[in-house]
Length: 430
Image 1: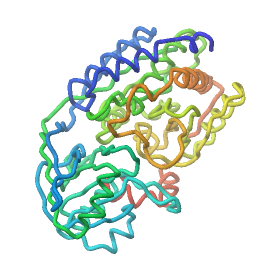
Image 2: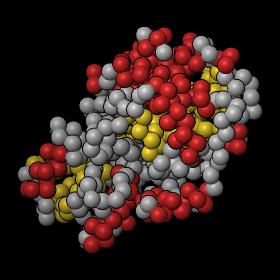
Image 3: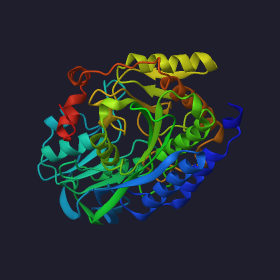
């Protein structure tokens, strides 16, 4: 604890990542981040540190615009939007609930949709779900309106695994611009245009190993890529810095581990969980004891661990919380939107780990404001201590974690209303 709480390894790595700048999937900054993470894991004392490359659909940002009768409005393109221009009547679809799309004539029109959902609504609606509801409704273009103040247009990819480039032009606008559009341009013809390039590209996964050479292994993961408009400090420099700090801490008790621990910093998470999907198809999933996936922690002092119904994972988290007399929030629900999911969907035990924050949505995530100075070294070190203890606990030979049947996971997604959105985005695996 003392060495980790005074360590600079994770914090220095976070600073390295944010200072790269653009870490967009398939671009040079992502490769630099993967190389830096590989080297940081090797410096921590891990063995077999390397990058495993794979092909990915590239996307390079150009200009974007929303032209209205009142003049142009500031916006940014959503990654994997197709290049093109569309003109149509602006229709405010509010929070973009499925019922609103069903009740609204969007044929040939431009859909204005919020990033949030009402407090009374029973589940989170992902951006891509709203986008493909708009596509199905015949919309000509999609305008994604932030609910967070601060003149922050949101980013976030569209597209599916089968068709990585989306079907209609898509842009993000700030809460303030969105309010102006809703007030002054609803019912008017507006023109949305996106300029971009879609080259073939290469991404990769940075990986390294600690502990004994056992058949079974624990995966401790994050993603190294980030959206091109900001530093990607919280999402997900923080998670990647955390696994580097965990690697440094576990090196000091390497001989005590009963199970091999493999660290993986995935590439191309922000454009459809590509790196983790590649990895989940490459490995023998029966040999993975559990996945401990850190994504958007540190911003928020208290760790939130989503356990996807794996009771043993919840019990392990509670053991660590009791041991350190430190709060950890355990959520037994499903979150099918980060790099644990390509494993969990097959019944492999896995956590989604982030920092607990107030309110709905990403906060500063996926905006220009996801920057280094909003994070605290104290939080990173505290969370690394807790997660190191969690990984060491899970690595014990006496800890057994039962897999789950895919049918049970599918039923729970159906019952929670999540299946509808996953089906419309092409993410339903069952």
